[in-house]
Length: 361
Image (cartoon, rainbow, N blue to C red):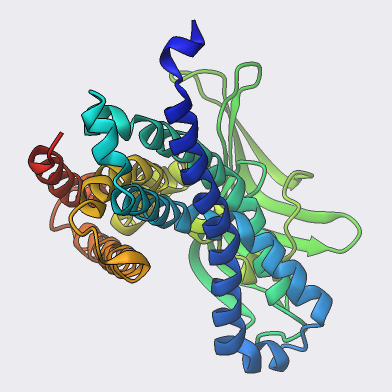
């Protein structure tokens, strides 16, 4: 049954696409790392980073790099493979045999769909790797600012802290709230304390506060306390000061929880909402960019590799500019941030439909 749908031509087209795709996803990260090293070598030296730590930081950076460059890799693979088929009249021969252009590029679209799924995986794998990378890049250089005020912190255990003030030197926090969402077999928790002190051996001890146990959305069991030890509050004062987590360090669900906490505290979250939606929109670009690149690559039969490189680079730069424009529009609230995140895909998708409609089948 499979043989009826997967022909030798399908395997040939998919094989050519995969070959270029494999070389691209191996070459692009190396190029990114070299550029980063040239730009930031002095900064890394000032932080006294060892060669081992720097190499390990680039290893942790691979998932995030692949997450960003996978759509470009799909575009390069589509343009170069279709361009090769066009130059050697293989598409013309397929049409003469009764195979339409749409059927001809079906294996490429299937591979682009696979790349989209792979990119969604990278969007979830990259955040913890990014967090480890940033720890390595912190080096041995320490900051001089021992205080931090009015911030929220999303822990790796899924808890969220809202802290009015933190004094690292004094190892104290004031007006802290700890929120832990309910699970299938555990109630939600909300701890509010006026003060907290850190001890190297015993950890954090919260003072003068209230513990709320939330078994469901309507019930609230409250207990006041003079002193409370929270063993799940594991972050040191230094980590709380230095580890304000970026969107790139949080998975989709973690970023969603963080946004909700900030919304309840009245903070501006439009840019974070754009970043969250881009974790889905960028992988979807893999499929849309293939639909865009396939008919575009047939527009010139004599351009060769130079034409393919020019088209791919120009489109990639255009798309990256659109993403920055997206963040600015959504962050300023000029349109709903979730909608703003899809602007690049909507524009590229519109061009793809026009090009597909004009291509000779």
